Structure formats: structure tokens, C-alpha cells
Length: 253
Image (cartoon, rainbow, N blue to C red):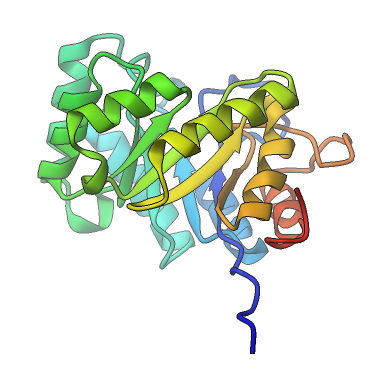
């Protein structure tokens, strides 16, 4: 008997660095993120990624905001790992960025992120990754190009990552697919889980490719706001549902 299709794994990326006004249902508050997390879980998402905001709606890595937001989302979608960003643009100061991430280790278990993404292109990638590992938080290594994969391999930290995010920018689909293939080839086939996703124009082509390869997908308003047919998505849960409906591994190219 041949094995069945690989179970579809989608991480819902709820808001990213998007500005208010990008989409009428863009969740910015902890309450809105929690509501979307529950809806995405019901649609089939197995993991969540979010960018917590302070009272003014600005992205922050402050432990108090991270903790309160993670706790609210975890209550709404129990059992789903919650990932946050560590992007170096969020605090605009390398010292504060690293200090905040280190401080997450002191958060109560219910408020500490399960995972956090780190962009290998950023100069602080190594100390941020080490701070996460010391805090017991899973590292999602963000790789947008082959040079990022080379850097990760050179640091010797690949085997310590929870997940490898092959994330290609908003470029023409054929270019995005070609770049993704190069990054995946450089990483090889062993080690942590691979996730493949894009932004804007590259989002659905890379989602289809991830589905065809049996890799984890990432879909949500951080990455795009349209359904596969080009119509506006009602919200995050609709994007996840559309991803769940993509053909399984082996049925698409």
C-alpha cells in the first residue's frame, strides 16, 4: 500500500509589519490577533506567526507586550505553537533588540513564544539566535537568498533551528521559484523542517510549490491579501482555507 498524501501544514502569518489600512481585517491588537488565531486554527492552520504591537499600534519586542499578546493568542488557539518576529527594524537599536530577546527568557511559560523568526541577512542574526536558544525558544531561520543559507551553514547553527524559512520577496513568480530552488538545494535534504513562502506576487506560486513538495506553507495578511483567483481575501482564515485547498504533494508542479 502506498503512503497517503503528506498532511498539509500551514503557519498563519497574521499581520507582519503591515500598516493600518493595508486590509480592513488586519489584526493589530492582542484581542484581534487572538480572534484571528482561533479562526485560522479552525481553518486548518497548525502554527501561528505574529508581530505584536504596543498601545500605539507600533511593532515592539518589549517583553511585557510580547508576553501579553502571546498569552492571549495561546488561550484562543491552544496547542498551536506561537512564533513572533525578531526583525532588527522593530526596535531600531541592535542593543535593545538583543536585550529584549534575552529578556523573553524571564517571561512565564504561558507568555513565552514557542518560536521566533530570525532574518539571516541581518547583522545581529547570530547573537539573536543564540539568545533565543538560551531562552529555550525555537529558532526559525529566515533565508531569502543563497547567501543567507551560506551564512547559516557557516555559523554551524542549522541543526539547532526549529525550522528553516525559505522566504522569497515580492518578485516575478519565475524568479521567485528559481531562487527558492537554489536556496533549498544549498540547504540539502537533512535537518529541520523546511517552510517555503513568498510575499505579494510570489506568495501563491511559492505556496503551490510548497504544497507540491510537501513542505510547510505560510499564508496570511503578512504576506498577501488576495485569494488564488486574485479576488480580495476576507481575512486570514480565508487565506489559510485556500491554502488547505491547494493540490497535495505530487499533484502540482
